[in-house]
Length: 241
Image (cartoon, rainbow, N blue to C red; front, top):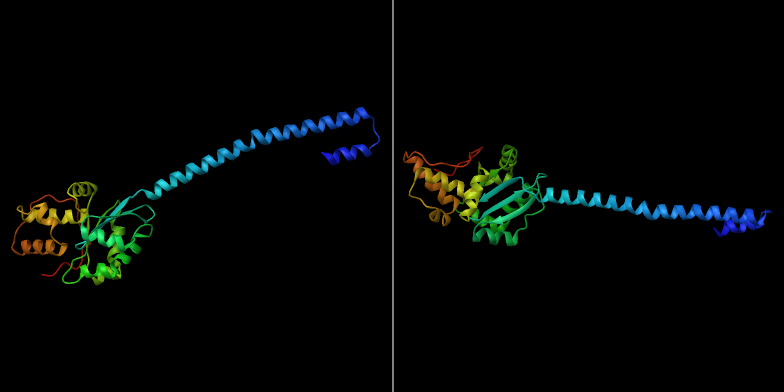
């Protein structure tokens, strides 16, 4: 504005014309300033609000599990997996599982990275020795995709892992008994052959011991009559005879 005033001083014009011109220019600048104050911040605030809602919604979607993987040997660990295939929760359902999770971080990586990290851990490997049985149980809208990847894993093949599917009602019941849904599904399978087995019995048993009991029942010709949630799916390399 000072440059404009200096320019007008050099122009040969009446004082009235100069004053009118300056007044007009002053009003124009005031209007522009008011527009910037009232409209620009409103636009910026609206845009910021929209970005906040998008980020909030995205964060909520990221944190929400849509699939679950129960990994049981004696340590019982459940992974919650979001729609992007990332682990967003890792929970232990016995003392051994808690000890493993204290040493092996599994969250915010892909579920296959988490499984491989777990199976490659020296402390976890000790549970797989001496006839330890590795069991994966999956709850998902498309469990076959997860089971296919798990079954193709080099470590899963090395330890002759068993794979099963289950459902959310089994998971809910399992947690009421403070048990992973993978181990609870196995308990239900055993109870189908031996109605005398209790949930307390199974709390103190490894997956290898549970599978041995099931194998013994089937070899003795007992027929499973109990109700199970979920079922087998692509289970390979069954535990030894």
